[in-house]
Image 1 (cartoon, one colour):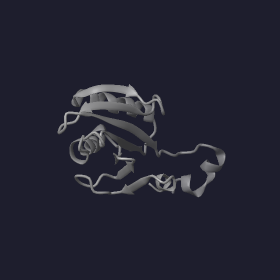
Image 2 (tube, rainbow, N blue to C red):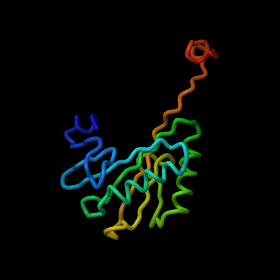
Image 3 (cartoon, one colour):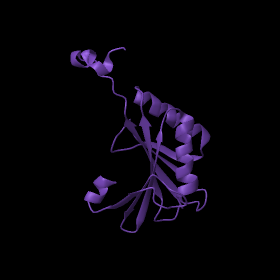
Image 4 (spheres, one colour):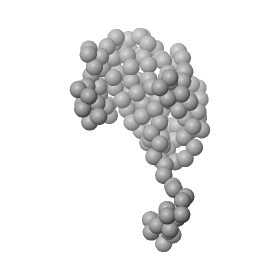
Length: 148
């Protein structure tokens, strides 16, 4: 949010929108909502997706885009994103699934008929890679990585 605000774009954490999405961005007359989840399992990710689509978004023409930020504290993110994509495709009535042109193979877009407005609602699924385990010599010898 701080980055967006520095660019003169209105963004806030935990704003009100049928509940409290993690991020709300207002640009011109449009609202973009974002929900973040620690993606320990596809079930955790699904809860975030449901919150975003079923609770926070209205599906109105000025509120037809959202984002799901998936925090991955473990390795093999590409494998986990593919698993999430398949899991969601099996459980939601998606109109389309396609790679995101901004981050192909890592991020993807889904479109669904919004449950309230029946208008198209597009969600960008974005992984945030948190796993960190360096293997270089200085990391192996640091106190933090030595077994106690």
